[in-house]
Image (cartoon, rainbow, N blue to C red; front, side, top):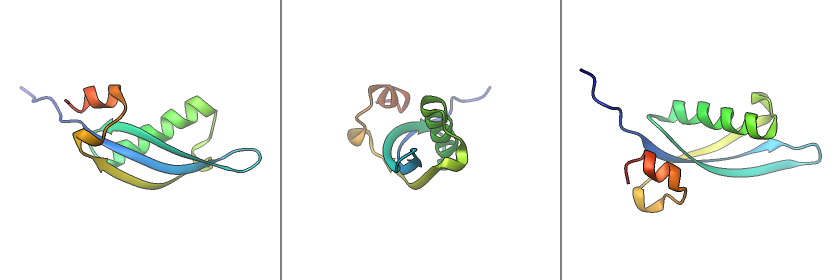
Length: 80
């Protein structure tokens, strides 16, 4: 029997290539570890903005405590 994995909340900060300039972003993502967070952030931004992975630059990944989370979906997935 496998125990359910514990999801953590992270804030991903960076920028992506817009036709005119670099566009900054900050999103909250829930995942098991930092590697999975980077993968999920690249996937989300790529699908929303039709970007290739090489056009997205992640500068910071910070783990959030439960009281710092603002996204209700991330808060639910993190167990708050």
